[in-house]
Length: 339
Image 1 (cartoon, rainbow, N blue to C red):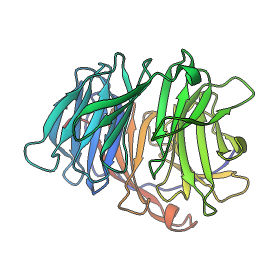
Image 2: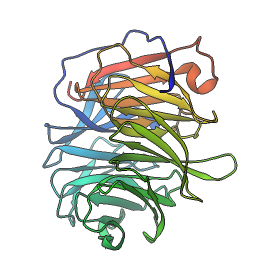
Image 3: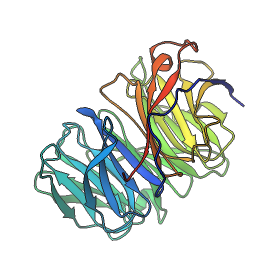
Image 4: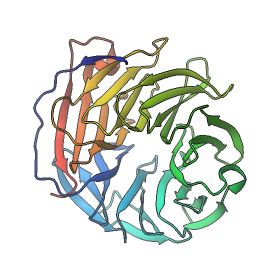
C-alpha cells in the first residue's frame, strides 16, 4: 500500500444540488475558464464557464454523453454519446457556435480525441473500431476495425500522447494496445501475466525521451510500463477500483481516481513510486468519473467529474510547484453540470 499524505482543503466556492453523473470533462486549451461537460442522463454537452459557474452553451447529443475534447486551438469541441453519432461544434468562441453530426459509427461512442494539428479527429466505438475524421471537411477518412489486434474485444478507453503520435487502446481482454496515430499500426502490446481488466491509460515522455505508459485496472493496481521494452517499471495498489489515470501535461505527476471519494497524486520521479498526496478525503465526494488538466496553468489546475453529479475545479498549489506539504490544494469550484 502506498504511503499517503493528506492535503488540507479550503471550502468550495459554491455547492448546488446534483442532477446526474458527470461522465466526461475537458478544458479549453486556450482558455481554462471554459470546460466541456457531458453527463449520464441529460443527453447534452454543456460548456461551463468556471469563473461565473454558468453554462452559456448546451448541445443535444441524442444519448447520454460519454466523452468530450477540445481542439488545441480552442475553436472546436467534440462529444460522443450512447448514440452512434458524434457531435462536432465549430466556432465555439462565438455567440453562435455551429453544431454538426458526424455519422459513421454503429455503436456507442466511447472516446473522441482531437489531434494537435487541429485538422484530424479520432474516435472509437464500443464495438466498431477506430475512425479518423477530417475536421475541415467533416468526413470520415478511415475506419479500422483492428480485429487483427483486438479480435472481437470491446475498446474501453483510448488516450492520445501530447504530441499526437501515439494512441493507446484499453480493451476488454485486459490488454493495452499502443498504435501509431497516423496509420494505426501496432507498436506494442502491454499485457500483464495475471487476469485484470484495464480501464484507462495515460502516456508521458521522460527527461531521457523515453515513453512511459500508466494503466489503471479494475483490481486496483496501477502499472507504469516502458514502451520500448514493454515491461512494467512500477506497480502499486490504490485500494479501490482504479478507473482513471492521468499524467499532468508536464509529466511530473500521475493522478489516479476511480470508485473512491479521493484522488491520489503520485510523484513519478520516485523510484520506486511509493507515496502519494491525497485529495478530497473525507469530503464525501462521489466516485471520480473523469479528470483533465489545464494546459495553460503549468499543470496546477485540474477539473474532476464525479458520480454525485458535481464538477470540481482544483488549484494544486504546492503539489506541482515543489514537494512541500505545507501548501495545499483548494477546491476552486464545486457545481453540477446544470445550473
